[in-house]
Each structure stands twice: as C-alpha cells, then as structure tokens.
Image (cartoon, rainbow over all chains, first blue to last red; front, side, top):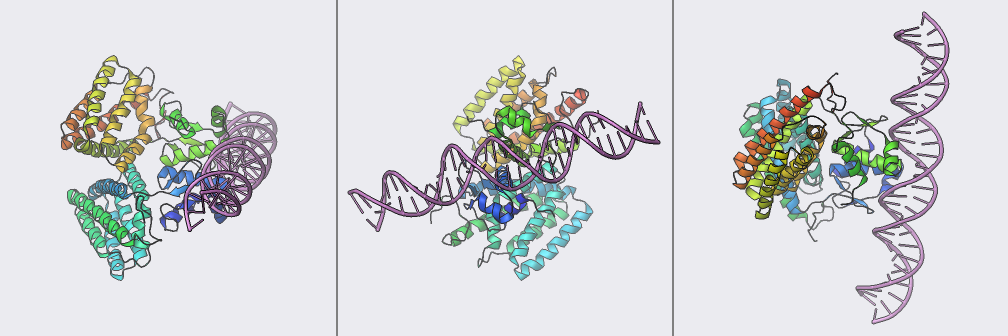
Length: 226
Length: 226
DNA sequence: CCGGCAAAAATTGTATGCAAAAATTCTTTA
DNA sequence: TAAAGAATTTTTGCATACAATTTTTGCCGG
C-alpha cells in the first residue's frame, strides 16, 4: 500500500498521536516526513476539506474538535447513514460477501473474549466497511466513510486510550445481531439495530468523556472547561 | 462574502465553464486569478478531497465525471439523504424558517411561470438549503451539501445549457408539495415526496443526456462514446 | 505577583526556480 | 500514407526564499 503523505498525516490523527485541538506545525511535519513544507501544506488542506482538520487562516491548522452537541448530532446523522447501508447490504450483498461477514463475526467473537482493544478497533472498521461495500452504491459508501472519518478521532479514543477498559462485549454482540439480520435479508431489522448500535456507541463515548475529563491524554471536547 | 480562490475555481465548475472531463491547468488558472501556482494547487487539491475534481498523480486534474451507473447511484444516495433532511425539517423547523420556506415557494412559482432558468437554479439551491438548515443537524447538513456538490456539475447543466428547455414546472410543483408536507409537519410524506423528487430529477437528467449526447457543450458522461 | 506592552522568534502565505514526467510536435521509415 | 520514434514543449511536483502575520518571550510599572 503506497502510503501517501496525506495518509501518513491522517494516521497521526486516526491513531491518536494527534488529538482533537492539537496543532499541526507545517515545519515539523515536513522535517518528520523528510519533505518540504509545500507537500505538507497540500496534504493538510486536503484533510481540511475532508473535515478531519480545521483550517484557520494565518493560524496553525488544528485537529478538528466538536462540542458535545455537535458530537451528538454527528452520531445521529451517522446512525441514519449506516442504517441505510445496512438495509441495502441486507438485500444486495452477494454470497462471497455474506461469507466474509460471517467469518468476521466469528473472529470478532474471539477478539472480544480476549479483550484485545486494538484488534477490536480494526474489526469495527472492517465490519462497517463490509456493509458499506455490500450496499452496492459508491456514493453511499463515500458518504458513510467521510462521515465516519470525521468522528474517528473521538470514537477511536474509546479503543486506544491507555487504561480505559471500554466494554467490547456489547458492541460485538450488536455487530453480531446486525450481521444476523443482514444475512437473513431482513433490511428493516438490520437498519433498526444499526441505529441502536450507533446510538449506544455515542452513549459509551459520552460516558468515556465524563470519566476521563480530567486526563490530559483524553481528546479534548470543545466547550468542556477542565 | 470573501470569495476565496477555492470558491472561485469551484465556481468555474459549478457555473458550467468547466465541464466534467475538462482539464484544470495550474498555470493558466494562476494567470487568470493573478496568483502563483502554489495557491492554485492547494485549492485544486481541496476540491479534489471534496470530490468535485479528480486528482491524478503527475497528470492534470480534471473535473470529475461519472458514468451512467455512478450517476444513478449518486442520485439514489442523495435521495435518501435529502429525504432524511426533509423528514427532520418537517418536525424541527422553527416558525421563521417556515415563513421563509413559504415565501420561497411563492417566488419560485413566479420564476417557473416566467421560465427563468438561471433563477430556477438559484431557487433549487435555496430550497434544499432551507431544508438542510431546518433539519437542525450540522453533520446531516454537511453530508447533504457535500453530496449535492459532487453531482452539481451534471444537474446544473439541465438549467444552464443553452437552448435546452428543461421543464421547470414539474420540479417546482414537487418542491411546493414537499414544502406543504414539511409545513404540515408530516415527516413521512415529506421524505417520500423528496425521494420521488430526486428520482424524477435523475430521469430528467438521463433524458437530457440522451437528447444532447451529440452536442460538444454538453457535460461528458464517462463511458458514453460519441 | 500579574497585567500590559514591546521586541524577538516562530509560523503561515505566496512567489519563484528547477528537475522529472507527460503531452505534443516533428521527423523518419516502411 | 501511416506508424514509430525522437526531439521539443508543456506541465506537474517539490524545494526554497521572503514578506506578512501571529505567537512567544522578556521587561516594566502598578
């Protein structure tokens, strides 16, 4: 996989090295990746257009941060979009994809039991990715992934932050239930379960913020004064 | 409104001066807007991340073009997203917004009667924009507008292309019906009518392509050999 | 001790130059 | 004439330089 500069910088955000509110210094990023400021700027601007980074004229770009209301709206919207994907996937997925979905749930079962948080994060991406593909609509897939990307700096923290033991069992079970509905071709049920799943993730995330508000390595929620 | 370079270049695409498949030459764009290539490149990359322009390594960027299948999927996805906005707007719009919606339909009535195509295009944007705002969800609004942006090079052609008399009456009537449902607070009906409206626009657009396939000033549909 | 102000440092925005790749034109040959 | 290939021009990608602005630092008075 040819890791572009854009992807490398995005990874700093997605892997949690840069957290919401953190500044992106063009000079140091250029030095870090062994290029000049020009390509770094281009990459940052692209990530700005994708909504992962906030571009402020004449000021340093920062990792985009949301306040609680914005985060809640983002999850509500994502719930609807993922529900659309799930409903379509239930009807349109082909046999090979259904097999992969089944296999993924089995693997995920194991990961959840071992409480392997970093593998669980990977699985989460793959699970939703399968449904995005299964929906057989490139625009829906694009929209779903763009939306997911924007909230990832927050949702990934649940899995990656040290010494915070997020519950892996419940999301796994919800994934399994959604998969079951999809495999049964029950679009209605798949979309309902998906909406509930995303809503539940938001609740877990809000609880996470309440629990970790005092920690300096937690992602910053705009408007939370601590 | 400070028109940024990004917006200026986007306008070339949205107003139809640059059509899908057309190349964007950095040097001539720089000369045209009286700046150097550097800011032009940054703007182009941003528009690439927004999906309006296709960035190809070491090759000129081009206005993004879709084939018929892609266009159809894009409209299907947009139909669902706009339907979500309409449903929420029906429930959440405040009184001031409802008044503006009513007023906009009245103005639009007049424009449709006068067959003022360029004003009709403006109205179309404003109508959907009101519903995006009315949905009271910034992520849904963002998603809806990002989606709309991507297909605009095609849908705008219906309104802007010389000597093609698109039917303005039907879309106006559909807008009016949707507005009525929204104002009545009928989310279910608003979303159903919205889906039908978008589906109808796709049909008109496909007919438009069939009718104008031979014209060199028509937007290019990928895969259509002419 | 701290708030305000000036100087210094750091950082962004843009222009410019050059190497590398791609597109175009021109030439040669079958 | 058409195809192939070489030479030329165009165009992109990146580094670098510098002006403009912001941020930080250091200093002073209250």
